[in-house]
Image (cartoon, rainbow, N blue to C red):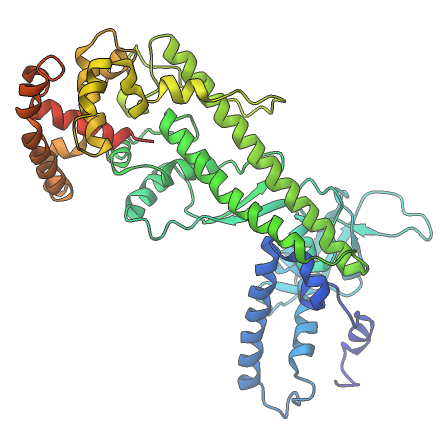
Length: 476
């Protein structure tokens, strides 16, 4: 605006146009539908609009006339900053006086393009900074820079380009568990394990973030898990913590990603036939890799789930059962608990053996004909039938689940510890009463009608409460 400005020669050589998604037209934006960038563009644009409205109030028209301080010009200036600025940290140690809070513009150095893995070194001197890439530069050869470890979404949003087959590309998801009634207890567990409670996770095609599964393990924990794990200050959430939690963590992630993939694939119908502009071609590179990341991650999760089920079947065949770590900690009879293999296999093992033989479901009643016939005459919820079945299994040594259930003899649902803690009593008191009333409504009536199936000594109120606690705590 000012012809005499010291910075005018620099301003004059800045690009008049940029190619970030903020400058895309409607047809080009269609290529971002169903991707995380679709919402990131709107969030960034709205953020700039809020800043622009604030600028209109704070900057007098005598300083910047309103025909100059338009939103389009403000957007141009912000894109200059996002695509060409350097961190203020780069200047630490220099004698230059900086008033900027976080970013600075460096004429000439900001003209270098990005080339991944370029060996670049920045040096500090009294009156500025030095830049070297430690390679011989021939006449006419382009000098390049490395913008850092950036995904294609970051490169596209900040600079307006993508790197084909970028190994750093990722899919951004937000884990929102703020409405979970157990959120405070879960955040305490995360803190004790040294995990941040950040909701932002970035998934690459070849690997999950190192702390994603540990956070998911906590997210799927029940109140019982939290009660017992909360007593153990040495828990390591980066290890396998039991069959049920491992499966639920992966089920949750796969559910989230499959929803994202569904939205992504449904958006294909509205795409233009061809990417005819540079902006559209950049967006298509990004879009293609997002689909690849989603599909490969879902596949790898399916493989991991099958590996877990396969191992559980082997443990079951050996007379054991996968149990939460707080059940078997320090006991010699614990099942194998090493980390599961995440390897990709061409053939995914079937899960029928797992669901038919390892899990205890209503289908399991068929293994005990006497119980099956009796259960068909009892009008109660499935949870109650499962409770009765567990007590039946406990009294029948030939049952496939007998050994596993006997390993739970010492387990107590927190509701059974209500006398030891006022807080526990308040939390589970009502549940304790309801289960006790359910027992009283069934016995001695069931014993009178099916004496061989429900003998009184095996179906006392204490044992019924114990078995109800097993169902409540370990259901999948």
